[in-house]
Length: 90
Length: 282
View 1 (cartoon, each protein chain N blue to C red):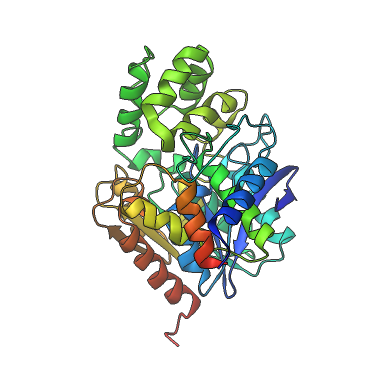
View 2 (view 1 turned 90 degrees about the horizontal axis):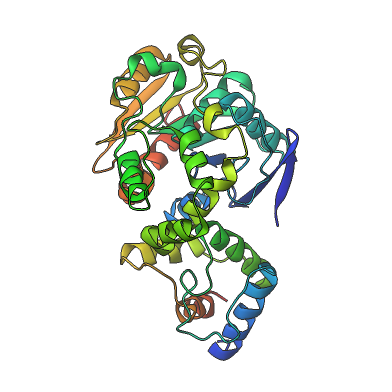
Protein backbone atom coordinates (compact mmCIF):
# COMPACT_ATOMS: atom_id res chain seq x y z
CA UNK A 1 0.00 0.00 0.00
CA UNK A 2 1.29 3.47 -0.87
CA UNK A 3 2.37 5.28 2.33
CA UNK A 4 -0.12 7.94 3.47
CA UNK A 5 2.48 10.73 3.41
CA UNK A 6 3.19 9.99 -0.23
CA UNK A 7 -0.53 9.90 -1.14
CA UNK A 8 -1.13 13.18 0.72
CA UNK A 9 1.77 14.85 -1.10
CA UNK A 10 0.49 13.60 -4.47
CA UNK A 11 -3.04 14.71 -3.58
CA UNK A 12 -1.87 18.20 -2.60
CA UNK A 13 0.10 18.47 -5.84
CA UNK A 14 -2.91 17.40 -7.96
CA UNK A 15 -5.17 19.89 -6.13
CA UNK A 16 -2.75 22.78 -6.77
CA UNK A 17 -2.26 21.80 -10.41
CA UNK A 18 -5.99 21.34 -11.05
CA UNK A 19 -6.92 24.75 -9.62
CA UNK A 20 -3.87 26.91 -10.38
CA UNK A 21 -5.71 30.20 -9.84
CA UNK A 22 -6.94 29.39 -6.32
CA UNK A 23 -5.34 30.70 -3.17
CA UNK A 24 -4.64 27.58 -1.10
CA UNK A 25 -3.00 27.53 2.35
CA UNK A 26 0.77 26.93 2.20
CA UNK A 27 0.65 23.87 4.41
CA UNK A 28 -2.02 21.19 4.26
CA UNK A 29 -2.39 18.06 6.37
CA UNK A 30 -4.81 15.21 7.04
CA UNK A 31 -7.09 17.57 8.99
CA UNK A 32 -7.39 20.10 6.16
CA UNK A 33 -10.99 20.26 5.00
CA UNK A 34 -11.62 20.22 1.25
CA UNK A 35 -14.64 22.53 1.30
CA UNK A 36 -14.09 24.82 4.28
CA UNK A 37 -10.29 25.18 4.16
CA UNK A 38 -9.48 24.73 0.48
CA UNK A 39 -12.68 26.46 -0.65
CA UNK A 40 -13.61 23.87 -3.26
CA UNK A 41 -17.25 23.60 -4.37
CA UNK A 42 -19.21 20.51 -5.39
CA UNK A 43 -18.38 20.84 -9.09
CA UNK A 44 -14.70 21.20 -8.14
CA UNK A 45 -14.93 17.77 -6.52
CA UNK A 46 -16.06 16.33 -9.87
CA UNK A 47 -13.05 17.92 -11.56
CA UNK A 48 -10.68 16.78 -8.79
CA UNK A 49 -12.04 13.21 -8.96
CA UNK A 50 -11.43 13.17 -12.70
CA UNK A 51 -7.90 14.60 -12.34
CA UNK A 52 -7.00 12.07 -9.64
CA UNK A 53 -8.26 9.33 -11.95
CA UNK A 54 -5.95 10.65 -14.66
CA UNK A 55 -3.02 10.96 -12.24
CA UNK A 56 -3.36 7.40 -10.98
CA UNK A 57 -4.36 5.95 -14.35
CA UNK A 58 -7.60 4.41 -13.14
CA UNK A 59 -11.16 5.40 -12.44
CA UNK A 60 -11.75 5.76 -8.72
CA UNK A 61 -15.17 5.07 -7.12
CA UNK A 62 -15.61 8.63 -5.88
CA UNK A 63 -19.39 8.42 -6.01
CA UNK A 64 -19.44 5.57 -3.52
CA UNK A 65 -17.02 7.46 -1.27
CA UNK A 66 -19.04 10.68 -1.40
CA UNK A 67 -22.33 8.89 -0.83
CA UNK A 68 -20.77 7.24 2.23
CA UNK A 69 -19.85 10.67 3.59
CA UNK A 70 -23.36 11.96 2.97
CA UNK A 71 -24.96 8.93 4.58
CA UNK A 72 -23.17 9.61 7.83
CA UNK A 73 -24.05 13.30 7.72
CA UNK A 74 -20.56 14.66 7.12
CA UNK A 75 -20.52 18.35 6.17
CA UNK A 76 -17.00 18.32 4.74
CA UNK A 77 -14.22 16.04 3.53
CA UNK A 78 -10.89 15.89 5.38
CA UNK A 79 -7.81 15.31 3.24
CA UNK A 80 -7.00 12.41 5.58
CA UNK A 81 -10.27 10.71 4.60
CA UNK A 82 -9.44 11.23 0.95
CA UNK A 83 -5.99 9.73 1.52
CA UNK A 84 -7.52 6.64 3.15
CA UNK A 85 -9.98 6.32 0.25
CA UNK A 86 -7.19 6.63 -2.31
CA UNK A 87 -4.97 4.13 -0.48
CA UNK A 88 -7.81 1.59 -0.48
CA UNK A 89 -8.44 2.00 -4.19
CA UNK A 90 -4.97 2.32 -5.74
CA UNK B 1 -10.64 18.05 -18.81
CA UNK B 2 -13.19 16.07 -20.85
CA UNK B 3 -15.04 18.68 -22.87
CA UNK B 4 -16.95 18.63 -26.09
CA UNK B 5 -17.78 21.41 -28.55
CA UNK B 6 -21.53 21.21 -29.03
CA UNK B 7 -24.10 23.50 -30.63
CA UNK B 8 -21.77 26.49 -30.56
CA UNK B 9 -20.77 26.12 -26.93
CA UNK B 10 -18.46 23.97 -24.80
CA UNK B 11 -19.79 21.32 -22.45
CA UNK B 12 -17.88 19.63 -19.63
CA UNK B 13 -18.79 15.98 -19.22
CA UNK B 14 -17.92 12.77 -17.38
CA UNK B 15 -18.33 9.27 -18.70
CA UNK B 16 -17.83 5.81 -17.21
CA UNK B 17 -18.99 2.22 -17.57
CA UNK B 18 -20.03 -0.07 -20.41
CA UNK B 19 -23.46 -1.02 -21.62
CA UNK B 20 -26.59 0.78 -22.82
CA UNK B 21 -26.22 4.56 -22.87
CA UNK B 22 -27.72 6.70 -20.13
CA UNK B 23 -27.29 10.48 -20.04
CA UNK B 24 -27.84 12.37 -16.78
CA UNK B 25 -29.07 15.97 -16.99
CA UNK B 26 -29.12 18.21 -13.91
CA UNK B 27 -31.47 21.08 -13.00
CA UNK B 28 -31.16 24.86 -13.40
CA UNK B 29 -28.59 26.31 -10.94
CA UNK B 30 -27.32 22.79 -10.20
CA UNK B 31 -24.49 20.89 -11.87
CA UNK B 32 -23.48 17.31 -12.58
CA UNK B 33 -21.94 16.92 -9.11
CA UNK B 34 -25.41 15.98 -7.88
CA UNK B 35 -25.16 12.66 -9.74
CA UNK B 36 -21.76 11.91 -8.22
CA UNK B 37 -22.69 12.93 -4.67
CA UNK B 38 -25.94 10.95 -4.77
CA UNK B 39 -24.00 7.81 -5.73
CA UNK B 40 -26.25 7.31 -8.78
CA UNK B 41 -23.49 7.88 -11.35
CA UNK B 42 -21.36 5.05 -9.96
CA UNK B 43 -24.35 2.79 -9.34
CA UNK B 44 -25.53 3.04 -12.95
CA UNK B 45 -21.99 2.77 -14.35
CA UNK B 46 -21.85 -0.83 -13.08
CA UNK B 47 -23.83 -1.95 -16.14
CA UNK B 48 -24.33 1.15 -18.31
CA UNK B 49 -22.22 3.67 -20.16
CA UNK B 50 -23.15 6.71 -18.11
CA UNK B 51 -22.56 10.25 -19.36
CA UNK B 52 -23.23 13.31 -17.22
CA UNK B 53 -22.53 16.89 -18.22
CA UNK B 54 -22.96 20.45 -17.07
CA UNK B 55 -25.68 22.39 -18.90
CA UNK B 56 -24.42 25.54 -20.62
CA UNK B 57 -23.89 28.30 -18.08
CA UNK B 58 -23.49 25.78 -15.26
CA UNK B 59 -20.61 24.01 -13.51
CA UNK B 60 -17.53 23.84 -15.70
CA UNK B 61 -19.29 24.31 -19.03
CA UNK B 62 -19.03 27.55 -21.00
CA UNK B 63 -21.45 30.36 -20.13
CA UNK B 64 -22.67 32.02 -23.34
CA UNK B 65 -24.90 35.09 -22.91
CA UNK B 66 -27.97 33.47 -24.51
CA UNK B 67 -29.56 30.21 -25.61
CA UNK B 68 -30.97 28.74 -22.42
CA UNK B 69 -34.43 27.55 -23.45
CA UNK B 70 -35.25 23.86 -23.31
CA UNK B 71 -35.05 23.85 -27.13
CA UNK B 72 -31.48 25.22 -27.00
CA UNK B 73 -30.57 22.80 -24.24
CA UNK B 74 -32.13 19.87 -26.16
CA UNK B 75 -29.98 20.81 -29.16
CA UNK B 76 -26.92 20.94 -26.86
CA UNK B 77 -27.79 17.47 -25.62
CA UNK B 78 -28.22 16.11 -29.15
CA UNK B 79 -24.91 17.67 -30.21
CA UNK B 80 -23.13 16.15 -27.21
CA UNK B 81 -24.78 12.80 -27.98
CA UNK B 82 -23.51 12.96 -31.58
CA UNK B 83 -20.04 14.24 -30.69
CA UNK B 84 -19.50 11.40 -28.22
CA UNK B 85 -20.89 8.82 -30.62
CA UNK B 86 -23.50 7.54 -28.19
CA UNK B 87 -26.16 5.02 -29.13
CA UNK B 88 -29.82 6.01 -28.67
CA UNK B 89 -29.84 6.83 -24.96
CA UNK B 90 -32.20 6.96 -22.05
CA UNK B 91 -32.12 10.52 -20.72
CA UNK B 92 -32.56 10.91 -16.96
CA UNK B 93 -33.30 14.54 -16.20
CA UNK B 94 -33.91 16.25 -12.88
CA UNK B 95 -36.37 19.16 -12.90
CA UNK B 96 -35.43 21.37 -15.89
CA UNK B 97 -33.06 18.58 -16.95
CA UNK B 98 -36.16 16.48 -17.54
CA UNK B 99 -37.70 19.24 -19.65
CA UNK B 100 -34.48 19.23 -21.67
CA UNK B 101 -34.63 15.45 -22.03
CA UNK B 102 -38.25 15.41 -23.16
CA UNK B 103 -37.60 18.25 -25.60
CA UNK B 104 -34.67 16.27 -26.98
CA UNK B 105 -36.98 13.28 -27.41
CA UNK B 106 -39.29 15.49 -29.47
CA UNK B 107 -36.63 17.33 -31.50
CA UNK B 108 -34.04 14.56 -31.86
CA UNK B 109 -35.94 11.27 -31.64
CA UNK B 110 -33.10 9.22 -33.11
CA UNK B 111 -30.86 10.14 -30.17
CA UNK B 112 -33.38 9.40 -27.42
CA UNK B 113 -34.55 5.91 -26.55
CA UNK B 114 -36.55 6.97 -23.55
CA UNK B 115 -36.83 9.66 -20.90
CA UNK B 116 -36.92 9.40 -17.12
CA UNK B 117 -38.19 12.60 -15.52
CA UNK B 118 -37.42 13.52 -11.94
CA UNK B 119 -39.92 16.04 -10.59
CA UNK B 120 -40.01 18.26 -13.68
CA UNK B 121 -42.16 21.35 -14.13
CA UNK B 122 -43.01 22.09 -17.78
CA UNK B 123 -43.66 25.70 -18.82
CA UNK B 124 -45.92 24.26 -21.53
CA UNK B 125 -48.09 22.64 -18.83
CA UNK B 126 -48.40 25.71 -16.66
CA UNK B 127 -52.16 25.68 -17.26
CA UNK B 128 -52.57 22.28 -15.58
CA UNK B 129 -50.31 23.01 -12.63
CA UNK B 130 -52.04 24.82 -9.73
CA UNK B 131 -48.78 24.92 -7.77
CA UNK B 132 -46.78 26.77 -10.39
CA UNK B 133 -43.97 28.68 -8.76
CA UNK B 134 -44.73 27.36 -5.27
CA UNK B 135 -41.87 25.24 -4.05
CA UNK B 136 -40.57 24.47 -0.61
CA UNK B 137 -37.05 24.89 -1.97
CA UNK B 138 -37.88 28.42 -3.13
CA UNK B 139 -39.34 29.25 0.27
CA UNK B 140 -36.05 28.16 1.84
CA UNK B 141 -34.12 30.33 -0.65
CA UNK B 142 -36.36 33.31 0.18
CA UNK B 143 -35.78 32.85 3.90
CA UNK B 144 -32.01 32.71 3.51
CA UNK B 145 -31.86 35.72 1.20
CA UNK B 146 -34.04 37.66 3.62
CA UNK B 147 -31.26 37.24 6.20
CA UNK B 148 -29.02 39.46 4.05
CA UNK B 149 -31.78 41.98 3.37
CA UNK B 150 -32.97 40.70 0.00
CA UNK B 151 -36.68 40.32 -0.62
CA UNK B 152 -37.54 37.76 -3.28
CA UNK B 153 -41.07 37.21 -4.59
CA UNK B 154 -43.18 34.32 -3.36
CA UNK B 155 -43.06 32.38 -6.62
CA UNK B 156 -40.01 30.92 -8.36
CA UNK B 157 -38.25 33.57 -10.44
CA UNK B 158 -34.74 32.60 -11.54
CA UNK B 159 -34.09 35.88 -13.37
CA UNK B 160 -34.84 37.83 -10.20
CA UNK B 161 -32.72 35.45 -8.12
CA UNK B 162 -29.76 36.00 -10.46
CA UNK B 163 -30.24 39.79 -10.57
CA UNK B 164 -30.53 40.12 -6.81
CA UNK B 165 -27.48 37.92 -6.27
CA UNK B 166 -25.42 40.00 -8.68
CA UNK B 167 -26.47 43.19 -6.85
CA UNK B 168 -25.23 41.95 -3.47
CA UNK B 169 -22.18 43.66 -1.98
CA UNK B 170 -19.12 41.43 -1.51
CA UNK B 171 -19.82 41.47 2.24
CA UNK B 172 -23.43 40.36 1.86
CA UNK B 173 -22.48 37.69 -0.65
CA UNK B 174 -19.92 36.43 1.83
CA UNK B 175 -22.57 36.41 4.57
CA UNK B 176 -24.91 34.50 2.30
CA UNK B 177 -22.19 31.93 1.57
CA UNK B 178 -21.71 31.48 5.31
CA UNK B 179 -25.47 30.99 5.77
CA UNK B 180 -25.49 28.29 3.09
CA UNK B 181 -22.47 26.54 4.59
CA UNK B 182 -19.71 24.61 2.92
CA UNK B 183 -21.87 22.43 0.68
CA UNK B 184 -24.16 25.26 -0.47
CA UNK B 185 -21.51 27.91 -0.94
CA UNK B 186 -20.68 26.91 -4.51
CA UNK B 187 -24.35 27.17 -5.42
CA UNK B 188 -24.49 30.75 -4.10
CA UNK B 189 -21.31 31.77 -5.94
CA UNK B 190 -22.59 30.84 -9.37
CA UNK B 191 -25.85 32.79 -9.15
CA UNK B 192 -24.38 36.25 -9.96
CA UNK B 193 -22.62 34.78 -12.99
CA UNK B 194 -25.94 33.75 -14.51
CA UNK B 195 -27.26 37.32 -14.19
CA UNK B 196 -25.34 38.22 -17.33
CA UNK B 197 -27.22 35.62 -19.36
CA UNK B 198 -30.78 35.07 -20.54
CA UNK B 199 -30.97 31.85 -18.49
CA UNK B 200 -33.46 33.07 -15.89
CA UNK B 201 -36.14 34.01 -18.41
CA UNK B 202 -35.29 31.34 -21.00
CA UNK B 203 -35.84 28.38 -18.71
CA UNK B 204 -39.42 29.51 -18.07
CA UNK B 205 -40.21 29.80 -21.80
CA UNK B 206 -42.38 27.18 -23.52
CA UNK B 207 -39.95 27.30 -26.47
CA UNK B 208 -42.06 24.99 -28.60
CA UNK B 209 -42.58 22.30 -25.98
CA UNK B 210 -46.32 22.85 -25.83
CA UNK B 211 -48.80 20.45 -24.25
CA UNK B 212 -49.47 19.03 -27.73
CA UNK B 213 -45.74 18.58 -28.38
CA UNK B 214 -45.31 16.81 -25.03
CA UNK B 215 -48.29 14.53 -25.71
CA UNK B 216 -46.77 13.60 -29.09
CA UNK B 217 -43.57 12.10 -27.63
CA UNK B 218 -43.64 8.43 -28.67
CA UNK B 219 -40.66 7.10 -26.73
CA UNK B 220 -41.18 5.52 -23.31
CA UNK B 221 -41.37 8.19 -20.62
CA UNK B 222 -41.12 7.55 -16.89
CA UNK B 223 -42.50 10.24 -14.62
CA UNK B 224 -40.76 9.90 -11.26
CA UNK B 225 -42.34 12.52 -9.02
CA UNK B 226 -41.57 13.13 -5.39
CA UNK B 227 -44.11 12.36 -2.68
CA UNK B 228 -44.12 15.98 -1.51
CA UNK B 229 -43.61 17.48 -4.97
CA UNK B 230 -45.50 20.64 -5.87
CA UNK B 231 -45.91 19.21 -9.37
CA UNK B 232 -48.13 16.17 -8.86
CA UNK B 233 -50.77 17.60 -11.21
CA UNK B 234 -48.10 17.59 -13.91
CA UNK B 235 -47.31 13.96 -13.08
CA UNK B 236 -50.97 12.97 -13.45
CA UNK B 237 -51.27 14.88 -16.73
CA UNK B 238 -48.22 13.16 -18.19
CA UNK B 239 -49.51 9.71 -17.20
CA UNK B 240 -52.91 10.45 -18.75
CA UNK B 241 -51.79 12.13 -21.96
CA UNK B 242 -48.54 10.57 -23.16
CA UNK B 243 -48.80 7.42 -25.27
CA UNK B 244 -46.14 5.51 -23.28
CA UNK B 245 -45.78 7.07 -19.84
CA UNK B 246 -45.40 5.26 -16.53
CA UNK B 247 -45.67 7.31 -13.35
CA UNK B 248 -44.19 6.44 -9.98
CA UNK B 249 -44.01 8.37 -6.72
CA UNK B 250 -40.70 8.45 -4.82
CA UNK B 251 -41.53 8.26 -1.10
CA UNK B 252 -40.22 10.84 1.32
CA UNK B 253 -38.78 13.20 -1.29
CA UNK B 254 -39.63 16.89 -1.84
CA UNK B 255 -37.79 17.79 -5.08
CA UNK B 256 -34.34 16.24 -4.73
CA UNK B 257 -35.24 12.56 -4.69
CA UNK B 258 -31.76 11.43 -5.74
CA UNK B 259 -30.48 12.85 -2.45
CA UNK B 260 -33.56 12.76 -0.21
CA UNK B 261 -34.35 9.10 -0.95
CA UNK B 262 -31.21 7.95 -2.75
CA UNK B 263 -31.94 4.23 -2.38
CA UNK B 264 -35.58 4.49 -3.49
CA UNK B 265 -34.72 6.73 -6.41
CA UNK B 266 -31.85 4.53 -7.61
CA UNK B 267 -34.06 1.45 -7.36
CA UNK B 268 -36.82 3.08 -9.42
CA UNK B 269 -34.34 4.28 -12.06
CA UNK B 270 -32.80 0.83 -12.39
CA UNK B 271 -36.18 -0.92 -12.68
CA UNK B 272 -37.44 1.47 -15.34
CA UNK B 273 -34.16 1.39 -17.26
CA UNK B 274 -34.41 -2.41 -17.40
CA UNK B 275 -38.00 -2.16 -18.62
CA UNK B 276 -37.11 0.34 -21.35
CA UNK B 277 -34.02 -1.58 -22.42
CA UNK B 278 -35.77 -4.99 -22.40
CA UNK B 279 -39.36 -4.14 -23.37
CA UNK B 280 -40.36 -7.78 -23.80
CA UNK B 281 -39.02 -8.70 -20.39
CA UNK B 282 -36.20 -10.70 -21.95
